Image (cartoon, rainbow, N blue to C red; front, side, top):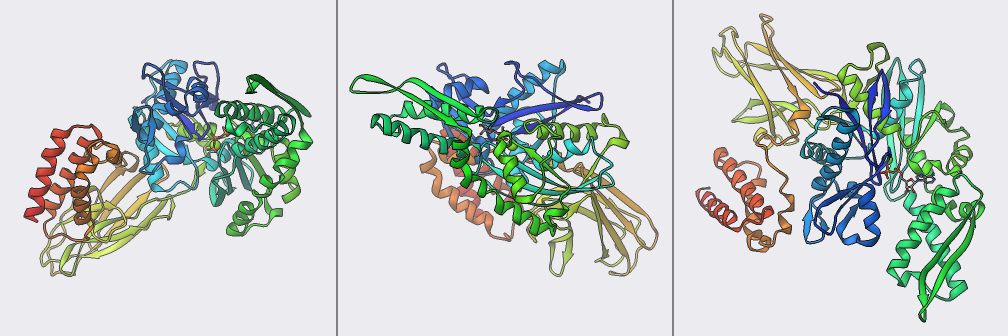
Length: 565
Ligand SMILES: Nc1ncnc2c1ncn2[C@@H]1O[C@H](COP(=O)(O)OP(=O)(O)OP(=O)(O)O)[C@@H](O)[C@H]1O
Ligand SMILES: [Mg+2]
């Protein structure tokens, strides 16, 4: 089994790390940089360019370049690069493929396994989309880890003995997240999470852009917002200025030929002081307070009970951020972790725990929540389609839960245990995970024998299911790797982008009609239903591939099946 890497797949930047000699080490990309811009583009020859090259071409060719792909993960939106539209999953996969390639190069071994971090607020669909992107990039995603948990882990590895409440404050490029975790006996538990997904470094840049433009208008009577090229330059310069002001008291913004007036070039030439910048962004910092309050209230923790504040995200390098936190909570934020690397390091630590390359005594236990309801098929009155819930969704894992069931037929000597995940009460609408048979049940009247079914779901996504005949103690069991289960059991690709097909209009009505039928809770004929689902997928896949002939064939199949129903 090869090395598992940890990846922080960010909105603005992406980083990877790996465990060496028990400690996380950052992976260096071909540009000799640890930080890779999360940008994907097509060059003039329609070849993909990733990272710094893509970010550089964004200025010149925004219509061929995608940034902030992460914001669209889990949606049906597509992203246009030139003539073609791509799903967010496909473009994230390009980014991950790039990371996989340079990590393999850097580490001198083929990397095929990863732990990828996601924001704590990501829902199931966004998490699944992330796993799919990993798989499309040729990575087996061993685990999805929450970003704040990862950051706390990179802190926790060095401070295992501490019993503490840790507040992770993550101000990135486009989003702000606050999470409160509790650490005791080497167990790290997320207590509460909140944030603002429209607050980040970009907004700080924007404040400077507005202010610089005002200065320019005063000097030259020209509004730069009317000149697209000038705005691109201005934004770039504003970010540079902001970053410089993190370490110096003033910065001279100078762009010799930012625009022209009556054929004469005009220069942007303004000096910005740290104090000026501070007053410009005061209002943005004030917006961080509410999510902090929410997290404290939700976890029932007083500010005085916070033992440690960890800063994560490039934007926390601004000195005013620490100052504002100090003012608001009266706690000095810790400098113990690197704000740019903590999340990737934490993902690598998680990878190391899975792999056993972090020693047991250093290993930190984490809790997480189970994103789906898990249960088995049972007979209930007239139907044998009923889902009986054993582990409800959002229960903290690791967890073990069991239920006792009765035999439902006279002289029944075996029981089929079919395991499903999903939110429907009807098992055929849920996702089938696996099955096994428990035999040698004493032959007695219906309801006379009891069988306990126990589900144990651990932190690495393994679900162990055991059935025990209570009268004899005989048992049988099966283990399911939930991380492998996120791939569609039929090996399907993502076809949500069918709407972008040039033939979409022609097939829209039939697709809607079939989708309506499939949504109806119970159809008499489950076999037909499955056929219908398959044919619908075939049609969408054909549309994604712009294959009219196959699409027409699938349409005919669908019409026949509807007829039969
Ligand atoms: N020294 C610095 N001073 C101020 N801001 C900085 C500094 N270095 C980086 N930044 C800002 O940090 C932001 C990028 O942060 P980061 O890489 O943590 O974001 P991300 O994790 O990709 O995005 P998100 O967390 O929103 O998903 C950018 O807005 C960048 O301008
Ligand atoms: Mg981030």
